[in-house]
Figure 1 (cartoon, helix red, strand yellow):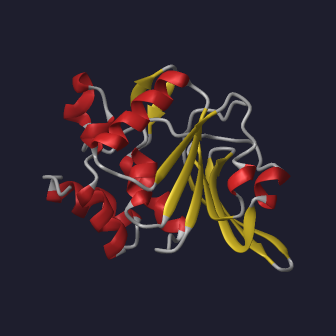
Figure 2 (cartoon, rainbow, N blue to C red):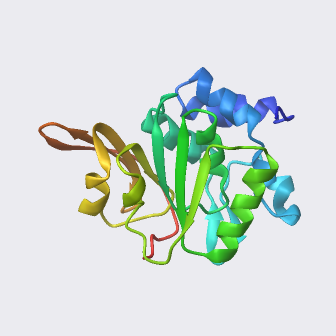
Length: 202
């Protein structure tokens, strides 16, 4: 599955935003962002910009994907829930770092395209759900970590119920990438860099 991802992209865009984590860097080397974009835009795959993927949605800036992946602190045994499959790129990156990724999407065409792209890369540990009224994936809970790839105003209690104690949620909340940690005492919240994401829609 190794592909010729530009080393300048890894050095200048990915490494600085994932604290030079070697496992995350390797995941970005293995998963070609160009495979998750339409042919007409593939030449922009290694620019640090969001790009349209249709239906009013975007594939996030790679530096943002790297940062959110780092904040999620993925471990090899983790079971991850992703809210908003989109292009499938974030799920594919995580697939190289964790045991399983469960990802939900509300737009049928994006769901179909993302699942096909991941299938063609022979990734076997990403599981898809198409739903227009997502409250996560309760039937597969609890999860070690949860990541939102769409902007939200807040995180509903349903998601914290699906998260293990000791787990993390990373989400764009009111244009800031925010980390939530579920502890025995409650939820801890840390705000990070500003960001711009498409809105989370039920």
